Every structure is written in C-alpha cells, then in structure tokens.
Length: 219
Ligand SMILES: *Cc1c(COP(=O)(O)O)cnc(C)c1O
Image 1 (tube, rainbow, N blue to C red):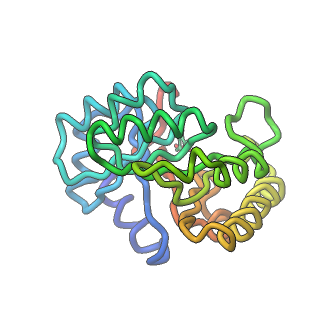
Image 2 (cartoon, protein in one colour; image 1 turned 60 degrees about the horizontal axis):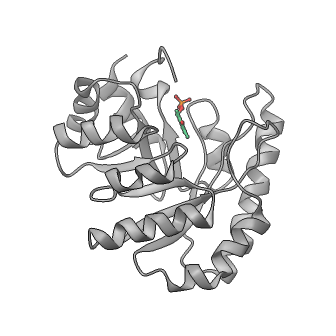
Image 3 (spheres, rainbow, N blue to C red; image 1 turned 180 degrees about the horizontal axis):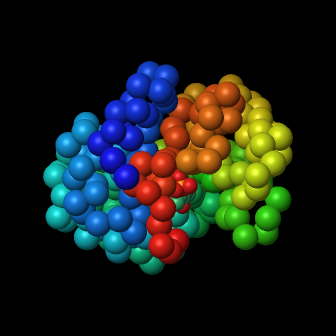
C-alpha cells in the first residue's frame, strides 16, 4: 500500500465539505505517520486503549475519533484528548461522556449512531430513541458534551441498492433532525467499500480504513 498516495487521492476526490477520517485501527504508528506526513490529521480508532497509546506516541495535532462501540467505564481514558465520538447509543453513555469531559474541563462532541442495517449485530438506536435523547431534560442540562450529528453503518452486503436504501433512510432522518436541532451538522456515513454511495447520500465524514492502509488481519 502506498499510504501517502492514497491520502492524496482521497484529498483530491472528496468534496471540500467532506472530512476524511483515516481509520487506523490495528495499524502500527509508522503507517499513521506516513499518512500524517501526507497531510492527514484526523484518525479513527475503535479501541480506546489502542487509541490512547497512539495518542501518547504520535504528534499532538492529530484529531482522534472513536468510531467503535464505547464502554462507559472506559470513557475516562479518552476524555482528555478525544476529538469526536461517533457511536453514542444511549443517554447513559452521553451522561458519562459529559461527566468525564467536565472533570478535564473540556467539551466533547458526539454523534448518535442510528441503526440502519438489517443485521442484529450492528449497534445503534432508532430515530425515535435518538429524538428522545435530544429532547430529554438530562441532555439539555449537559454543558460538557454536544451531539453534533448522526452516524450510520450499512448492512455488510454486495447489494449496492440495499446500501443506498439504508443510507438514504439516514439522510432523510438527518434532514428531519437538523430542522429541529440546529447543532446537528455532521453525517458520518461511508467506509472503503461504500463511500461513493455515501457521497451521493450527503455524508460529511467518510471513515476509510483498508483503502488507505491495506487489509487488516483482524477486526
Ligand atoms: C473499521 C471501521 C471502518 C473502516 O472500514 P474499512 O472497510 O476498512 O474502510 C469504518 N467505520 C467503522 C465504525 C469501523 O469500525
């Protein structure tokens, strides 16, 4: 894999309003540095411990995104530095994020993960549950966290029509939410295999791993 060339390719290909989150889970620091030296500054990981080790070792102007499922008892480890948490799926988790952010005197931005895939294995909540969180009194009182958008993952399938249907569903939920909650600006949709469909569906953040860094052996 020519990581630097891949970063350049995406920078040219993606519209200006779409952020590239380079998903570097399982990859060694050298690979991240190669992307960094090609100008990449946003990296995404799915394990808090691995991300924290990389944060300690790599340049401090990297913006770290947590894209995986988050266990509440681990929020404290990333609170000092995390840039964006993509997959918040409960009010309880949001409360913990707010609490830990307050302790370190930061504001942590989050996305709510909406379940759009058919499979049971995918995490996420319904649009109704997301709406309940955003309208809750508890959320309205949180001063150290803000929901700035929505995130989704399509079913793992070769059927592009199905992926597109699922993405369009989230696009319409996002449009609807934005009217009621102006703080929602970001839509995190699209990975290596489906980012082109995501671009058609109005994504503002694509999460690209294997197309940049090569196949992973695990995860
Ligand atoms: C691993 C991962 C990605 C990147 O997947 P690729 O297919 O390698 O691009 C994107 N989003 C999430 C949530 C992931 O866990």
